[in-house]
Image (cartoon, rainbow, N blue to C red; front, side):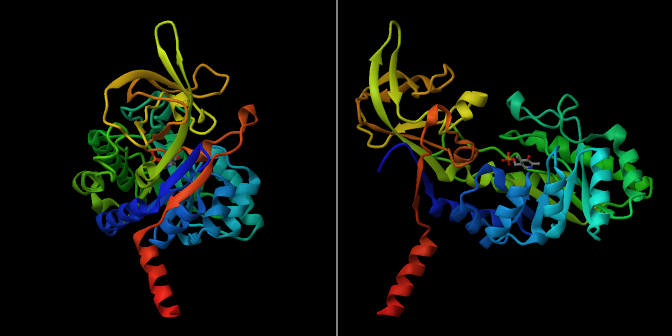
Length: 385
Ligand SMILES: *Cc1c(COP(=O)(O)O)cnc(C)c1O
């Protein structure tokens, strides 16, 4: 198979979805489609009954084409254009997560023109810092997302005065790749305070959406291929006061698809530098941007490990940028030209960020089938015979 290519393990995805569905119980999970828009992956997730979390008009259209029901589609994003808002209104999506007072006015005006009433949730910035990379924390005052608690009442009054908008919920999302459950506990406790203050003002909120952000194990994907959804949901069961709302929503992206994807690449050259040894591979930041974008580290293994002595290599791509690095002093058995390497945990924020910089071709995609679909194929064959 021609490298570089993405390889998706649909069987692992299916096992992940089964566990997620059984752990989520009566909670509503919307898949954050921006993490991976592969059609087979999206279809499988919608087949499991999950909703979709979209951040653009095209994502809404993609979600609809992949079988997500409009009543389970939510639409977030700080910068929605008129056209994108109209797509949401036209398809009667479940909810717009609004991020500014001006957005309330624009959605109200467009909804009026189209004779609709838009359901909205206010994205609140709870001023909680998640212990993750600064580029993927979203819930503090210093970033562009959401409405601060100080401005919340003002926006609620604005919505009450807007005839074509109905306030149905509050929305939160504090960041991504969060592994310390205390961050989610902080969020739950902050939420209790906000909700009881609103209750005292006579405002009842039906839907709470706590966003996504549950991290995956990048260091050891082989031992932990499926995230600990149980502990994650348990934090909210324990710490969120559920007498203050009716429905609890989640928007998980990375934790659903992250471990089911790999990027396969071949060694082009092994080059001895002055102090380091480089392995130059045929995948680059154009195929997987995360290391260059936020210093992310993925596990790298040989496709056919020999079990021999390990050497230290800087694993670098062919792109004309110094940040095009997948690993520094990375221990791997002796490499030679043509050797295939596997970059693990590349299912989320991988293929979706592919670019054609340097006029590179986009990587191919291959799949391991899910067991259920194999059984289905065997059944079909049996029937045909
Ligand atoms: C990106 C995003 C998510 C998903 O984040 P993950 O870390 O992939 O779970 C959820 N909600 C919103 C609003 C987002 O922007």
